[in-house]
Length: 114
Image (cartoon, rainbow, N blue to C red; front, side):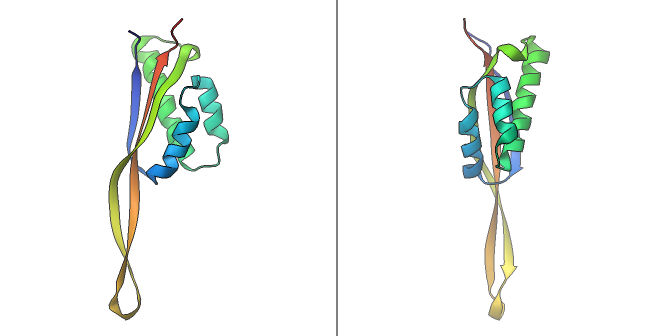
């Protein structure tokens, strides 16, 4: 059984659907390759996913002594968090709702089996 190291960022502002596009791009890649992919993706959620990936890598190095060169992204997910509900005033006393979604981003890394 191999060691799996996980990092999570909760309550990140942004759509879960947009974050899932970024997360799918790094799944199954080596950590260095995933970091370079995230650096050049045009999505705003790529910065949040990159920070979680960096945290998972640091957890593996600090807590388990696994060098970053041996790590692979085993699993990455973006799950739906709570939604902030706001209201915008409209004509004739009406109010339109504005939903501001949040996302929970989780990245799991593990050393590659020989």
